[in-house]
Amino acid sequence: MQNSNNFKEYIDQITVGWFKKFINQKIDNFKTGFLDDTDIGFNDFTPDVNVTSYMLNKIKLDIEKLNEYSEIKEFISNYSLNIKNNDDLESVGNSAQMELFEALQKNPNDIQEKITELIMKMQINNITKNLNKALNVIDSLLSKLGQDSSLDEIDYEDLEYILQSNLDISLEKLKRWSVENPKQSDNFKEELQILESDPDFEKKREASEIIEHYFANIIGQEIDEDEMENINVNNINEKSKIIVFNKGIMISEELRGKVELINQIYKNSDVFKKTV
Image 1: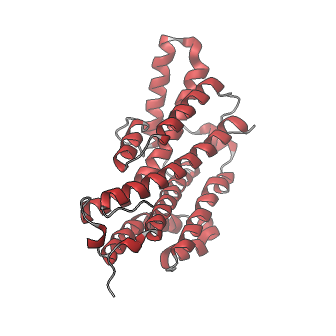
Image 2: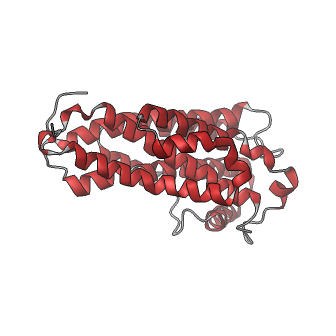
């Protein structure tokens, strides 16, 4: 890190580095699944390569330009769907259907391009939405410690308390999900225990990564094709496997993002005032 005694500049350096690494990783994973895999979950639909390349290149360029935390928040706003309840699958689905309908009315020959664009918008929206939840950590730090504060004026214990309190919010979400889904949560009970009680934050980081991997790559195998084909965004069953598991996926991504971000702060915490 560059030497600076200003808390805002410290936050800018930490968050920009974390955000660029994290979102580029997420986008690369999405690109692999969307373009390169033969079974990507979109039935017989083939994405438009030109649209995909253009959108991904633009996103990557916008990411590279980021230098401050405020620019990250603006980036997230620009790439998030303008929906009142962005966590609600029905709202997102209805918005996508309306946008597709309006586009096809104007030019019915652009269906492949428009569907590609909509799928990408929805996926990028999911990525930015979860990263924004992870950034609640930073919002809490800035509001409670003051962005104009000097680093040597901030007590490490205050920093630690704010970080842990914010992490506990996301951890509690996963614990509730685990209680409601004991069969699935049995697969990561050891990692959950580490997140709850292990003082080594690097171990917490590894545990959160394992849990996210489980949700991203394993839990979806429990959903059969009939459930996927029969989902109706206009009549969402909140108890269906798709909805329940999707909530778990979102929670695991939010939690891992927070853990990774907090881990970076702890790695650079020697600048704060510590009580002897």
